[in-house]
Amino acid sequence: MIAHLYPLPGNEDFTAGLCRQLDVPGGLLSVHRFPDAEVRVRFDTKPTSRIALVCTRPGDQVLPLLFAAHAARMQGATQIGLVAPYLSYLRQDRVFNPGEGLSSRAFGELLSGAFDWLVTVDPHLHRYASLDEVYRIPSRVASASPAVARWIRQHVREPLLIGPDAESEQWVSAIAAAAEAPYLTLSKQRLGDRSVHLSLPDLRGAAGRTPVLVDDIISSGGTACRALQLLRQAPLAPPVCIATHAVFSDSAHADLLAAGAERIVTTDTIHHVTNAVSVVPAVADAVRHVAVVTDRTGGSA
Ligand code: R5P
Image 1 (cartoon, rainbow, N blue to C red):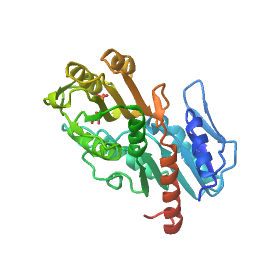
Image 2 (cartoon, helix red, strand yellow):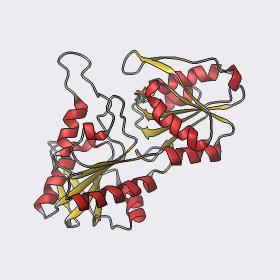
Image 3 (cartoon, protein in one colour):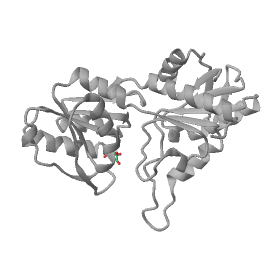
Image 4 (cartoon, rainbow, N blue to C red):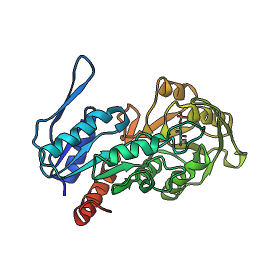
């Protein structure tokens, strides 16, 4: 099992919760940014042989992460895990136009070269069947679905779950089953980074139900806003909007409220004012599992 969990800046609260669940001490890692924007990392708690770094949106802190993994090995760590509650760079999973790179694979290669195992929550797997297609280290996925389903059961009367596109069916169906609620998915056509076309089926049979829009990520908010606008016109109660990952770029949160969301709820994979569901227990289970498997196999899954 791991001996210490070290948060990258901004991940202190999530790491503290994880330390409590796992009964593992937290370690201190400081990241200093020089005036020229270069960074230096320093372990203020000496790393032991098995440690894990905690960093959501690792794409935003990739150099400190890689430097920390390198520094930990220099100081004797032999097995370094990465807990990335939101795993960046999975959305570009195909070369769509000639000349483009493939950021999911490039990022997967980078992290696989520095870490021995990976834990994340609801990764955006659309055209990849599993993380093993992108990462060559053992990985374990924690699911937010049971906790989200619990929240829906406790807070929403007569829910009707709605996935905004075909790929959302994987998590909407799981949440609907656990919440014992009906679900449907919309058809979506992406028109640009922030703009989508959605069509709503005939919802007259669901009159009076509370629509619960469920997605894995809210980024620009374009998908959720369009869905909320359509749901507002249907003969349903005011819509609730739930997402696992609160990326919320620019004005996305305000845009969703303006589009008519009665309530916006996210999990704590990314710290945000809308966090109402914790995935810490699910992540702790995943860490226990992957750390034990990695111990047994010496790193090869
Ligand atoms: C799509 O593939 C995802 O499941 C989300 O619907 C999408 O990432 C949301 O992005 P945005 O908030 O920018 O519409």
